[in-house]
Length: 229
Image 1: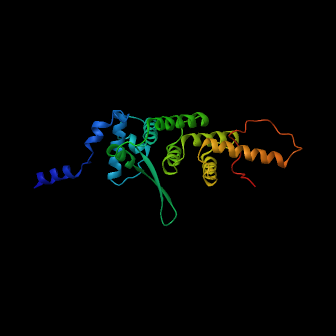
Image 2: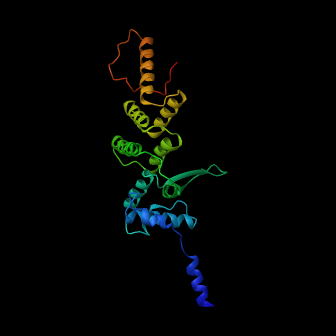
C-alpha cells in the first residue's frame, strides 16, 4: 500500500506537454533554453501560479533573471506568449501569462504572410532604437494589441511612433491616443495620415497668416491630439 501511494504521488505530480511542441520548437525559431522557459511557465500555470516572477522562473533554470527576461520578451515578440490583464470586484489589476498564442501557432494553419512578419519584426527593432533601450514585455504586448486586436498596419504604427518623437512625447500612452484618433477619423494608411496632416497644417497656417512659420516636413507629422477645429 505504501509503495502504491508513492507511485500514485509520482503519477499525479506530472505536467503534460504536447508532443508537437517538442518536435516543432526548432522550426518556431526556439532553442532548448527558450523551450525550457516555456515549459516552466506552463508548469507554473498548471500549478495555479499564473504570473511567476523572474526570480521564481530563473530559480528553476540555469540562467539569471536578465536572460530570463530577454527570453520572455522574445516569446512575446514571436506571438508565443501573451500577458493578460484583469480587474477584480475591488478594481485591483492583476496580470497573467497565457500560452494560448503558442498552442494556436502549433495547431492552427499559419495565416500571416512572411512580409507582414518581417514588418512586425522591424517594428520592434525601431521602437527599441527610438527609446534607446529594450522595450518591456508590457510594451511589447501593447504593440501586439495594436497589431492583432486593433488590426493596425505596422507602417501606421511606425508613423505614430515618428509623430510622438517629433512632438517630444515619446511614450506609449501618447501613441495609443494618436492611433485611436486616426481610427476615429477613418485613417487606416500612411497616405491618409499624410493627407490629414497636410490639411491640418494648411488650416493652422490660414488662421495665422501674418505669423512667420518655421519650415518643417509636415508630410506625415502633426499633433493629432489637438484635432481639427
